[in-house]
Image 1 (cartoon, rainbow, N blue to C red):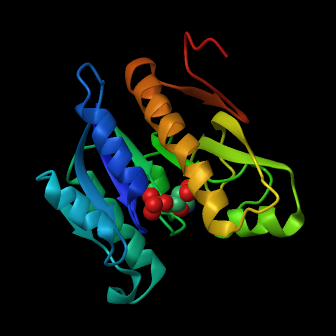
Image 2: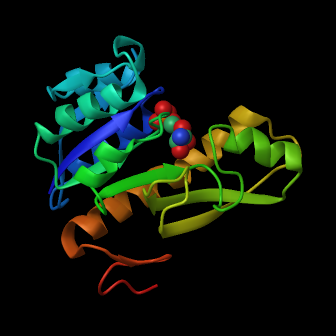
Length: 202
Ligand code: GRF
């Protein structure tokens, strides 16, 4: 399967997905990387000789124009799946219509708890003892799409946002690679809240 990966941050999730796609037999390859700002993820793509493109909101008169441009930039690479690996923008309606049901996102909390851009800080602030990682299909909401996989991560008493986020990312990296491979090989059927990967044991 052809993957286009979207990123905005340090690109560690992108890095791990690139490593996974290089293991023999992995059923997907990253054909392009898209970012919304200058970030290390562009460098990871360049290291692998993978094309990358930047579609920055500030370069467009409004969010609709930005969404259209991002949709066209991604579509140019004819992806089977789009993977949001720490992409910090809400995808607009043009994008969602074009790639409906084929967009996978990873979120560093056990949704529906702690949606949004500060999930790890919010979990720490709340004082939860367990948080975790969620991989889900993207729908029109913020971190609201049908869930594909979740795994719990303990919160330690001396955790700060960085130590907890790093521990969550260890799980995220594995879960994301697993789910991308599963959807790439078996597809996913989502009806309402349920996302079912045919033949999945869970
Ligand atoms: C990940 O935890 C992702 O879930 C969140 O931002 C982080 C991205 O990390 N949205 P990186 O940029 O891949 O290191």
